[in-house]
Length: 126
Image 1 (cartoon, helix red, strand yellow):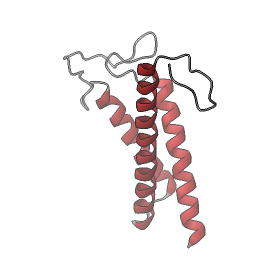
Image 2 (cartoon, one colour):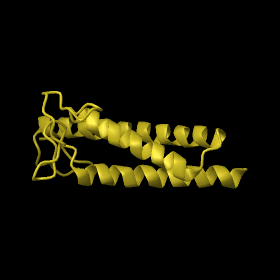
Image 3 (cartoon, helix red, strand yellow):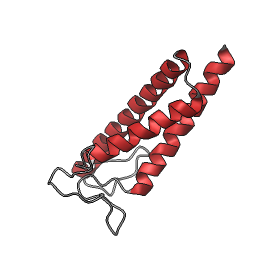
Image 4 (cartoon, one colour):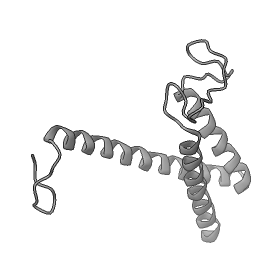
């Protein structure tokens, strides 16, 4: 067992601690990359004269497309296994990607918050 940051023994096995650290690091890096990509998309959209609503619609579409593709569903609605179902299951989870509609909605809300912040910051600086 390892010691935690406060010097007390950590009740988790070393292997689990390392796995959690790696997973946390990957998650933080992914969120940082996503935030940077959203910022760039908003700035590019403003540069081409798009309204915040237009940019947000684009972001919603991208999130929906990414969620569907990571779920094994192609843009034509067909799962990678050939199933034509809509991907909804009784528990709200999708079969291949564990992207529940609640998680996708939460991600969408966060991305739209970032979008609003980047859009308004840009307009304040002009």
